[in-house]
Image (cartoon, rainbow, N blue to C red; front, side):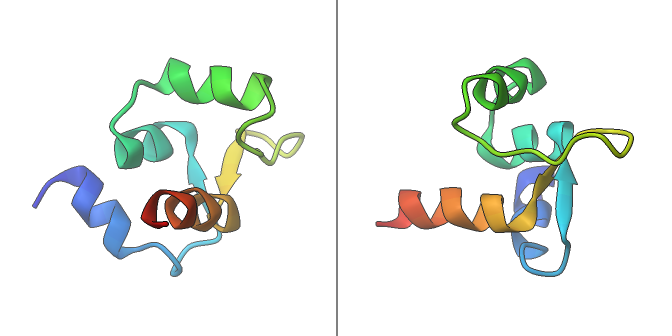
Length: 67
């Protein structure tokens, strides 16, 4: 089982994901995630330590892909 597959199975069980975890889920580099957040395409939680991608954002993105 790949890391990305393992993370996909956990969607809904967690409230947020690190930029590295999110990058692995979508098959991109961590810097791609930072660029998407900077452009406003992906919402991130900041100001409380390490920036995180909320699980609701992951569900929104994967929901758009499924359509």
